[in-house]
Image 1 (cartoon, helix red, strand yellow):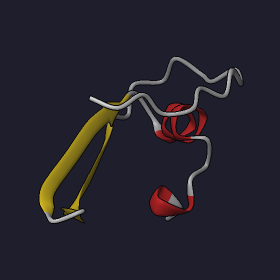
Image 2: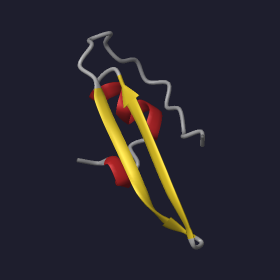
Image 3: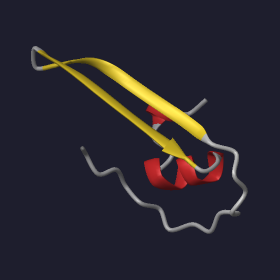
Length: 55
């Protein structure tokens, strides 16, 4: 498990789960990462608005 940046912005406690998944090949090895967040605000806060999950 890899830690992602934690932007400490306040988010509502609304429960509207969002699951993101990323997979591919890194240095010849297959890698996969998946996480579920309580809502899109929490997703953005935890991933640091990474371009990978900007949708």
